[in-house]
Amino acid sequence: MKLKSHILMILSNPCINDARVLNEANSLSEAGYKVTLLCWDREGIHPEHDFLYDIEVIRIRNTSFMNFLTFDILRMSHWWKRAHFKALEIHDKNPLDAIHCHDLDTLPIGVKLKDKLEIPLVYDSHELWPDMLSRDIPYIFPKRFAHIEKECFSSVDHLITTHDPFLDELLKRAGRQIPSTIIMNAKKITSTEYQKSSNSDLTALYIGNLSKPRLVEGLIEAVSSLDGVKAIIGGFGKPNQFQKISNLSKSNQNVTFLGVVPLDDVLSHTLEADVVICMTDPNDKNNSRASANKQFEAMSCGRPIVCSKSTEISNFTNKHGIGISVEHSVEGIQKALIELRDNKTLREDMGRKALSKACDEFNWEVQSKRLVAVYEGL
Image (tube, rainbow, N blue to C red; front, side):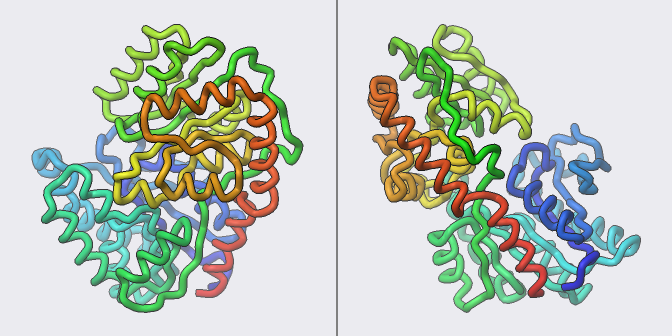
C-alpha cells in the first residue's frame, strides 16, 4: 500500500490510555501513513474530536437509548451502526484506503466497510474476545460472538495478534490460513544501560487494571506485614473497585496509591521501582493465555516481574529467566517479595537479563517495523 494512504483504526474505548493502539497509530503515522482513530466513548466525558500525538481522534458517544440498555453487550449493535455511518462520513471527507479493527467488538464494522468501500481489512486481536466475555456474562453471548468472529474471518486480509499462542488459536477458529503477523506489546527502550534502583526498601510496582483478578488487594495485604518492602499502585477500574483500592492503600503505611497514571509516566515509575507485579488468574480462559503490558514495561526498564504460575506470562518469564512465578495468592506474592528483598544480586541479575532481551528483540522498534511491513504488503 502506498505511503500517504489513509488508515482508519477502530476501537471500542476512548483511547486515553491504550498503549498498544497509540503505539501502532504513531508508528504508521511516522512511516508516512495518515491514521484516523474512531473510538467509542461510552461514558461521554472525552472530546468528540481530539488529537493524540498528532493522530486525529473521533469519538462516538452513546445515544439516550443506548444508555437506557444498561449493559455494553446490549449496546454493541448500536455502536457498530453508529461507527459505520461515522466512518462513511470520514471517508467522504478524506477517502479511506484500509480499515484496522482492534478486537472483535469492532470487527463487524470493518467487514461492512470493506464490503462497501472495497478496501483491505486488518484484524488486530489483542484478546481472545469470546473467552474474555465468558468471565461474567451468560454463555449465550460468548457463543454468539464466537460465531460472529468465525463469520468475519472470511473478510480479513491480514491478522495481527500479540503472540504465538493467540495466533494459533485464532487461526484454528478461522478455519483457514490468513496472512498474519505477531506484534507484541513491547515498549520503547529508555536506555540500553542498566540502571540500579536507589530505594532503601524493596519497592514493588503495579500500574494497570485494578480489577480483582489482578490481585491488587492481595498485593496490599502481602506488603502490609513485611519489613523493608513497599508497594506503589496506580491504574484504572470500575468506580467502586478504584475507591476500594484507594481506601485500602491509604490505611496501609507500606502502600502508596497514585490513582490514574498518565500513559507517558508509566515507564518512569517502573524505572524507579525494584520489581513489577503482574498477577493474572490462571483459571481465566483469556488472561491465562495472554501476554502482558506489565511484562514488557518491566523488561524495557531492566526490572524483574512477579507473576502467576500456569499462565503464558509465567512461561515467558521462566523461559528467559527474568522474574519469579508464584501461586496466584497473597502468600505467593509475599514469598517472591521476601526472596527479592533478601537477594539483591538475584533481582539485579534478572533485571539486567530482562533489559538485554528487550534491547535484542522485545522492543517497540522491532514491532514497529513488523507493523509497517504489514501495510507495505497490502
